[in-house]
Image (cartoon, rainbow, N blue to C red; front, side):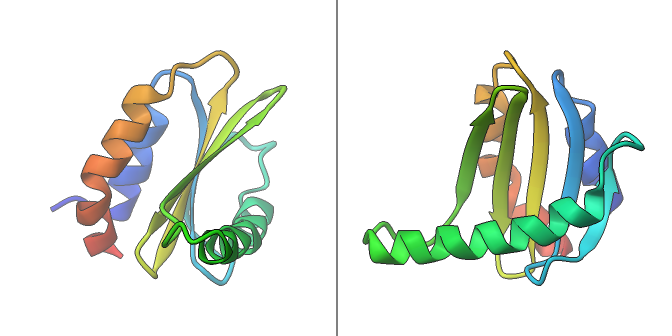
Length: 117
């Protein structure tokens, strides 16, 4: 049986992925694999706030529940994938990386990963 650590490591091995943080809805780091210069705890805390705002936006806009967000910055992208009510997967991706397959796989494997939480 896969463990959360296995999932985080599998995502981190994808081309262009620089860091992976699994955060709880209240902003705590559950698991992460990131370079030493990355503050996983700060990312988890900020992710909780951002995910709540995305949920509120979805309700206000009549779009339903928050599922996935892709934020693009000049230094790369950050993908947030909500995993039920138990967690949010945060994937930092290098600029210029094609994230199509990553998004497909996150959607396809979301139920199995959510079960691990």
